[in-house]
Every structure is written in C-alpha cells, then in structure tokens.
Length: 207
Image (cartoon, rainbow, N blue to C red; front, top):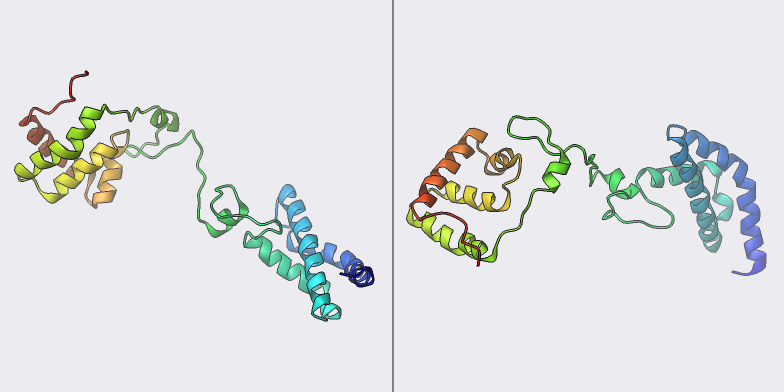
C-alpha cells in the first residue's frame, strides 16, 4: 500500500480511536480485568484491519466506531482471536466459547459406585500394565471360552469393558455404557467369575 494511502487510513483510524475505545470499554465491562484488556486489544487490532480492507474496497468513509466495536465484540465472544487459534487446545478461548471442552480440577475425579467423588491422584496411579501372555489370553482365549459357556451377549460385553476399565468407579461407568443398573453389572461380574473359574482363570505365571 502506498504511503499516501496508508496515511489516509491511519488518519481515519485515529479519528475513530477515542469513540472506539469508549464503546469497547462499555461492551466488555462484564469481563474480568485481564480479559477486558485482551478484548480491548482485539478490538483495536480488528478495527485497524477492517480500516485497511475498507480502503481497498473504497468504503473507508462508511466505517463508524459503533460498527467496529460491535463486530469486534461479537468475534471476541465467539472465541475468535486476531492472531488465530484452535479448538483443539483445551485452554483456548475458542474451545471454551464453543463449550467443546470442560476443565476439571485434578483433585476431583469421577464418582465411585456409592456416588462419592474420587481423588484423581488415586486414579492416575492405578496400574494398567498387563503381561503379554495375559493380553493374549484376554484377547483370544477368554472370549472363546465365554462363548462356549453360552453367556449372554451383554455379559460378554461387560467382560470386554472390564478388561479396559477396572479402576475405582468402573461399575458406575460400565453401567452407564451398557444402560443397566450398577447392581446388574455386579451380577454380570458374578456370572463371569463362575465361567472363568471353570477354565482355570488366573494370570499366566511369570516367565
């Protein structure tokens, strides 16, 4: 852009700046201080960009401070930022604005079978390491044995979930997945226990 054209855009921007700042303060008055400062900077950045684009289209004289502050506030509330962003970042403003993620304190985990909150620290130290021979038994031997035992399809599905989720609160999680009551999950676990005992269930001895 030529220097003369840039000076015209800057002059228009400077003339709008006092009213633009006041209107932006009003539109973002509900925000905490640190977010309000960010919103004001976003308003100024977008307004400058729109002034440049309006000059290229020959519509610079049509811009008003009220119009710029309105659309800048709308973009800020939607999570859009001048420098860009992504909804895949759980801490990004765009992900928060769209409600795509929810942050939870590490001190509080999912509820257990009794509906009491569990400590996330206890869930994180739950060991998921399984010896390779036992993995082979879980993936191949046990499903065949359970089909031969003529267990119901839901019981076998319960077994698959148990192989993936056996930490604290697993009964509640499995019951929600299978759409049954927690008591029914306990009954299914009893049926599985009886069937697996018949085939000498137990972890393979260490090599």
